[in-house]
Image: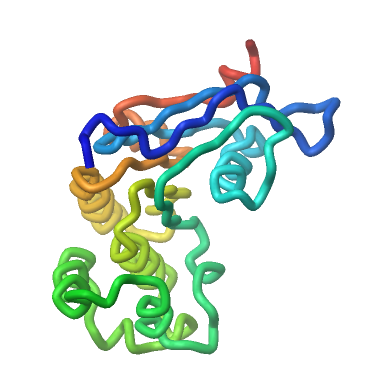
Length: 202
């Protein structure tokens, strides 16, 4: 993929849960391959709503959203996995089987996960372990656009830094849109920061 190619294009988006109270009005955003853009703002400012719109779980009132292949990493990893099935089964369901073992082994080492862990069910893992499994699955899906919602909130500081470095290193293959309340993380990792609170003052 061309390093300057857009993986997400939002043009003149308007959305609200009621027409009299718009969260977004004429909002435009472009994310390119090899680019990390952070979305920051107070609770209720529309950060998660934006992800739902991009994933087409919500429909805009006006405007357009075009994206290439998307995968998501959510803040609560327990909501990302079915409780009754092994992690590895839920990975194999959604990814390209070509060179699967090699790809998994490489990322397991980078995420400090063992093969034993991904053969377990979600409730058998800690929140931090399961979040790293969520990141593993999202990266193995080889997306063009990675939507990431507070990916390090369940991780201790050292692991969080290593995970963010891994996600940033993956930007040669995709673009990333990051939701975070951590301004220092946004300042450290982002090519651009969009503060929804500032937008809503306009």
